[in-house]
Length: 335
Image (cartoon, rainbow, N blue to C red):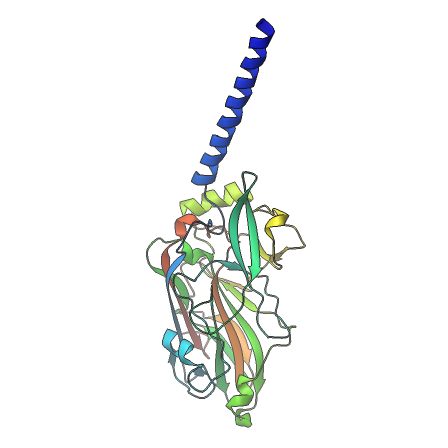
């Protein structure tokens, strides 16, 4: 009888410990911060504003037909209904926008940069990362901003980003702007007299190396600092931080792989070294940031703006904010 009671007592103790462990795991999953945004977030970026401007007589256009000094959301989304029937420009509406990741590889068939949308799911009591390749369309259904931008110059010209170029949060929780990226993918160049259709048809061959800009690299929220340590084992600070290494996604990741959020599996991830990194204080008026060189004629670039899911600043507490992407190009190296 004593042995029977002892065995029952042991079973009850094991059951209690198992239940306690399940409850403890549940607490961890609901209170910790994680890279990307957990799947139960219905809104990630509330609103996105894009402004592109040019100085010193530099001409810019969304269709290589209508040239103007400033381009807005309306110009970008309206290009397809105007003179650019094949445009694939997207600025996601708030409910559609979501973090994505890239290593900067360019598809030689489309000329587009490979972007992967990610989601955090649970498997066996652990968070896992799943990703799928994003399709670029025209309108407000995409997960990130992308559009074609045309430049017209009469001679070889160095182009700079001015001190008006930045990524800032406009309302809601701050921190989202610290995970932002902007990339410039050259599609090609034609002579000025070639016509707008020839300029519109330009497409990257897949061998190009995109210019990736990481603004606000030296600032993190308290939650992001915690996320950096908890998820990636990285120690950083809220202000005056050094550049942080990260790996971008380069292939689809299925749920069956049960990929850990902090994985560095080389089959699916590659280290990314942004071409340009600027602090939160921004580009100075005394020294603009060189970005690329234009040949004479019309040059087509494809511009990407996104929230990098693999950045430590991409975590739940930043979800729901609104951000503004601002680009101002100049042919001069300073104000």
